[in-house]
Length: 287
Image (tube, rainbow, N blue to C red):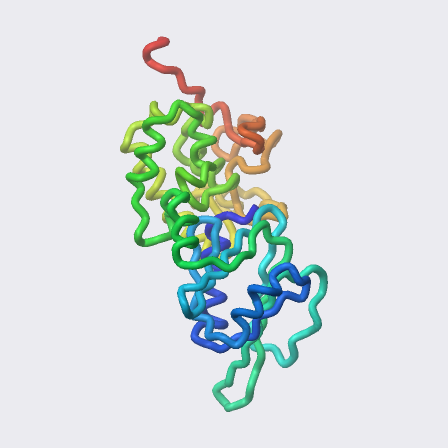
């Protein structure tokens, strides 16, 4: 499932490509046809992301809400000579004409396929979606204290809380695994045993890592001393891209201590960690 940086990156692409332009809106697949007809020929104001939710805004406080889910994909194509016929199950298509510097016209289009959600919302409905979400580290208006208030009261494992979108918006399996490793925290440690200083350090780290993800379009979490060049090791070969410490490296040696990276299932998702670098948490009351 795409993580928050992907949605923020898409929001930027959509705004740059279609913002303040009249767009043709259609639903070749048909499932969004009624709503598309209401927006066709309108000016697209812009797009923004909140965690894993994408909102494309139109006049009249109307928003196309998109959640990509596990299989969704939104492809943006800027300034092409011809818009091709739709291929596959295109739920939503946006098309706009752009006048280039030389005065020649060019077309831009975007196709949405396989999304869990694609719906037209009012401002009030959009606000309800946001209200159910935790703070997003990529948003300037985010308050890490809101997430901390929920974490400090919960006995659930921190590895699960970080993936709970009502606690923290935009973090998925990759950022979850890598953040816990970088801070040497046992993923099974109860949330209410963390100290506020630990949480603030984790939040600050997430902000930096996820902003870099928006910039590059991939997730890189290893520190300079653990890059392939610094360690003399081959670069990672994985369809998710990026250099990581533990994510999907089960059975492989940890870049820091050499111990085999472990995996297990936590709340229905695969968890990855190093038992040496992320020592099992033991409450002082039990010691």
